[in-house]
Length: 238
Ligand code: URA
Image 1 (tube, rainbow, N blue to C red):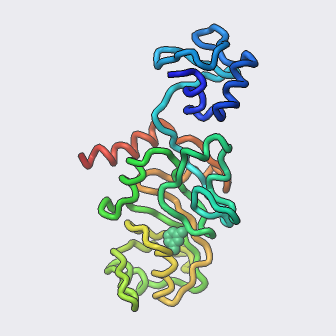
Image 2: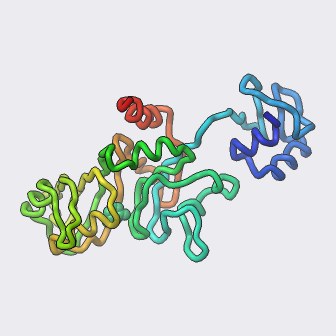
Image 3: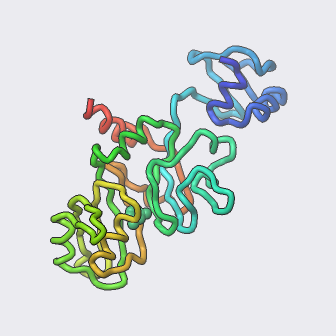
């Protein structure tokens, strides 16, 4: 593969930005300064840019702690999107896995791996998602039972059974586990029980937990261990 394409694919910069880096002498291949953006590199070569080794990888995986006030979309003319939190040269290839409401915070996976996205989001795959929620009125054991049985709204929308774990010290706070991702699902479930959700934070998707050291709006790459967890889910199905 051409060196400039390799660097652009690894999100070092746009094609023209990486050409400039090469001309500036910032890129080394196997210890030798690269001079030609068109020179060939392969998996066996060590590519270093500004002192950082640029390893080849097929996909990118990030954990974002989504802040409130931005939308889960790839682009929008008027509103800030979750991808606006990433450097411009990475935005073209990445997308969010699933959707959180504008006012919801917490774990959002951002990747360019469509197969993983399908694996985690397909309704038939029933991946559990845990959320912390606060309501405007205390939740009760009747709510717990109603969610455990599966709720049907007046408009006929049916939600699968969900686990509601109310905080014994604060009945306006709970952790809920759902296995679907219907539009405004948790808000609609609570609304059907006469409560308004005033705070919602996603804590986990499957076995992947939000890294609480990430501030809202911060992201990091998934670790090897976290990738194994996500991909294990995939291979278990095969
Ligand atoms: N349920 C909701 O109501 N909103 C979210 O953002 C996620 C789940």
